[in-house]
Length: 189
Image 1 (tube, rainbow, N blue to C red):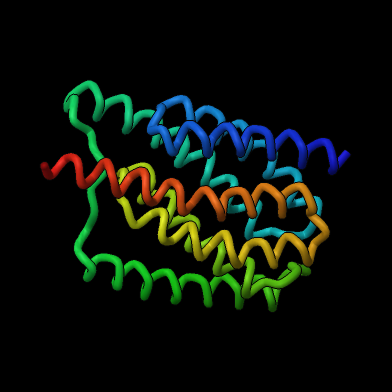
Image 2 (cartoon, one colour):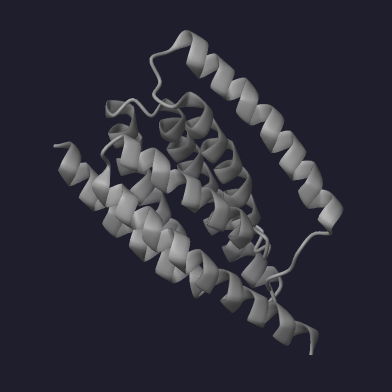
């Protein structure tokens, strides 16, 4: 059964990625469906932080859909933008503290597998997802690192289809970054 959940989640995940890069609001629907499927899968494989992350993905997917719809209605130019470097340094600091706290809890009070790696990819995925919903260019930089590390996590748990999906995410994080960077540059002209 886990293999079928994994395949379904991967298909929804690929649809999400394609539509996100193209800035199509439908991406959020596929993201929510894939995340709902993934909650069960990750719980069953002992990646509890990943399960929590997928609950968050459902919520951020709903938020992203509403935010993009509202922003597009109120501002026809809801475009890619970015925060100053100081904001990202603060996000990195907060993310590291939260990752260590989450990992400590899972390491000491559950049977979680690879709790420190799992917690870091989870917390920083929270941050990157929020940045996506706000159409911040640096979200893709976060995803490049997160996806590279997540490949190791999934390989360790024998989640082969998810490893493939994450590899695709890793490659397309570069595509997304350059696409959004180009759109941001066009806005300035």
